[in-house]
Length: 192
Image (cartoon, rainbow, N blue to C red; front, side, top):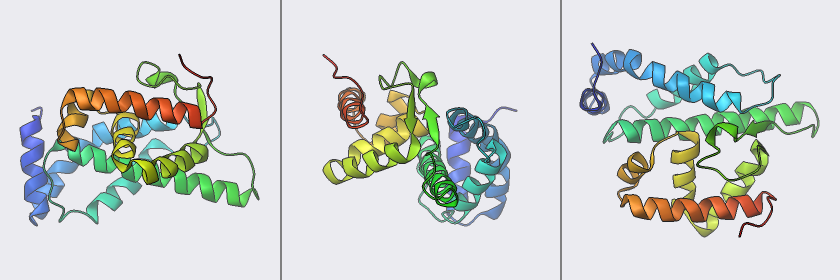
């Protein structure tokens, strides 16, 4: 049986209200999508990256379990929170790796698979991206959240609008602005 969005939402809400059985039924349903999300993110990393998709999913799920009492609204919100957790795990991993190498090279992520959504350079250093997102958060936290949802979670424009509670046209406009700002900040050529 394939679970619908409504099934996932119902399980998330039950889990958020303390139903441990709902959490156990939820894991197999969301695991495959979390695994795809992790694999997509790790394909952007350097070839010798030590973190594997399964480990990233497990670490993410452990962080999500800590938030089980959250007021889960829907599937898209859950995967948005998961994407934020994955982003933090990857950044922490990159920082630890850099510290071990005493300021060695930063981890690189590739934007090749998101070429339609992201006009930026093919490779971006994950720590440089994190610093740029931290700068953008000072200027416009909502756009950082949008980048997390679109880039890290891989949510569609429609799903992003649903999570943020805004129109799809607002997401489209703000996504263009956020991409342009990040592209410029990360050293891409000026766009016309």
